[in-house]
Amino acid sequence: MRKEICHICRHVPKPIAIEPHHIIPTQVTKQAEIPESITVNLCHNCHREVHTWYSMKVLDTTYDPATKRFKTKPWNERAKDYESAFKNFKKYKKPLRQTGQEAR
Image (cartoon, rainbow, N blue to C red; front, top):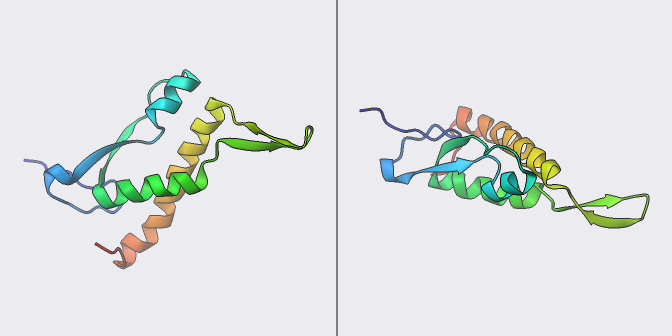
């Protein structure tokens, strides 16, 4: 029997603790009218942490210097931001995983 591991920290929790995570949230892919994003398996801790990361790194608005106002960011741009944020989250977590500093 193959054990599921966390895509980020490589932790092997109990099978029920592995959670599927859409790199780009389903709501965003529907609104952007793009195919559903891939999913990765994450432990509960990494799943919670990546959503916190998203809330800090992915913005719904952008500043328009021409009008000097904030405007809502297009859905396809948000999708790219989620992909980028996930890649950066993996880079952020990699040194912690390699040095064993991951708090569990």
